View (spheres, rainbow, N blue to C red):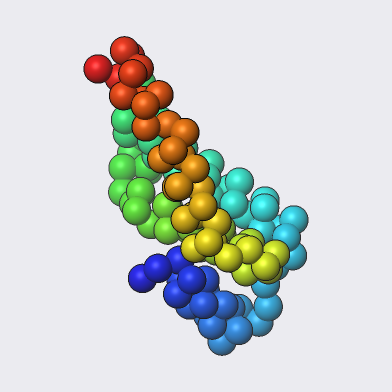
Length: 108
């Protein structure tokens, strides 16, 4: 599924099940909350903090999908075509960063 299809799928879901989009500020708060859940899993599972028993069954993929869902909502309600934006960003990063990363001694 490309990003345009993902945006349409989310829009269809919102219209069928969600009544309406939360406003942009609410969705920004939701995004922050979901990113925090991802950070908690990463810091405890892959970082130096010990993982609490209650966190051991948390699904990182599910939490990342929550982040993606809210990003897609924000894109839809603000008129952003994420496919176009992503394609432009990838082209920019490719041009700007290829030599920079290959020349970075820290990455070797």
